[in-house]
Image (tube, rainbow, N blue to C red; front, side, top):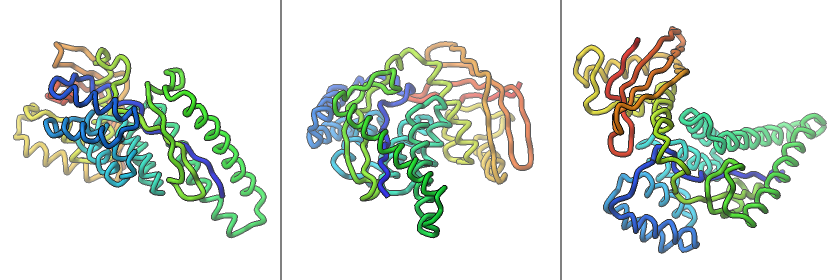
Length: 337
């Protein structure tokens, strides 16, 4: 089987990272420029110097993940992006890049889960949707291949497998050639400014892959679209709740969060942990969301929330009072209305 696949690393950090880089900005910019020029060793030295002063900086860590992956240190890159998804669960790009690298090791189910988290966090993230389609197609091709090994005479399975092979062979040849000739992809293609690089044979020997590795630069307009930042956080909060990831869910609440009943933060957290962990499944849907800014660091978000679990269905209006804390928006107060 010779299925040609294409997975794309993210073009930029999410709009949530609309922060400036006051300290160490030169080192960050130098590292990015060196990486673009193919000088990964020097870029790594610069970004390590930057991170020495700002070890939690998401943009710097994102760029380091790209650099070490370019150097062939896939496992280290996987750890970097995994840690980013834990520290910044509202960002879709680290999930997408993690999925690319997991797919490079044949861990398709884990890659699928990471892409689904990226989409939950940012439903309009086209790259993640495309990559998820590629994952499903790859898994389908493997299933058809296994079916043919059991029944070589199955004409329908042969046809389906051939269609997938033709689809990705044509897709990869066309897009890889475009990436070589035009490393900066236009916005009409659904990508922010990026540098393109290609590597082969990372899924399996029979499946060469063209990958686009891009620096951690901010998307156009990210500094002004604060509403998108806040809504992305709310969607990520709902996604963490839906996936029953209690630690991630609780990380969206500010240190000075006003608990609904006035109980201690510890007591409230314990109750939330029990209620989120108990059901077999949970799905949270948010609709009709609006954002109003009280000032540059405070916002009020109103939306319709639908809750579905194996034992209960409920819906109602909710208000979240959000506060900007460092590079993140956090929930300071939560009201049902």
